[in-house]
Figure 1 (cartoon, rainbow, N blue to C red):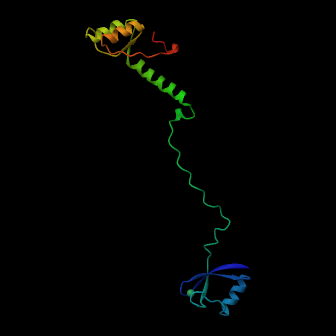
Figure 2: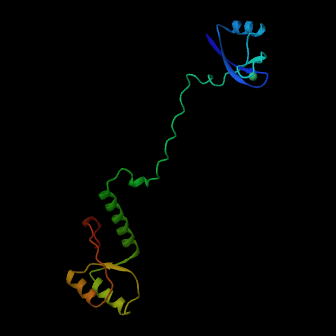
Figure 3: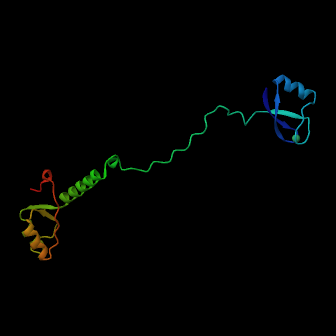
Length: 152
Ligand SMILES: [Zn+2]
């Protein structure tokens, strides 16, 4: 048996089952075919739309868009990311500050009291020197620096 999509003269679309294409032609010629909606015997075979895709691949589900990732953060654990961000901040600090070494406490004090040009500096200070600067109201910040990035 084969199935044909049929269309009557009034535009009704329906299916007809036949033993063969010749069987369809024979029944049609003898006026045995009739539209189930209106009874019209003027029936034409139309290309099958509903069966044309039989056996075709079902449409693939659309993949959700991947959220954009920062390439160098991909696959790293939070600790590694924190290390990287800290390293970048340190690079920024080192790039934008003048290294005054062990003169830092004195230089910071001079800048604060406008005895030296105002600028961003870095250097070493002992905990005691640091505390003295803070006590005087001089804005300083301490950054723990890994040995390989020594400020010397
Ligand atoms: Zn009809």
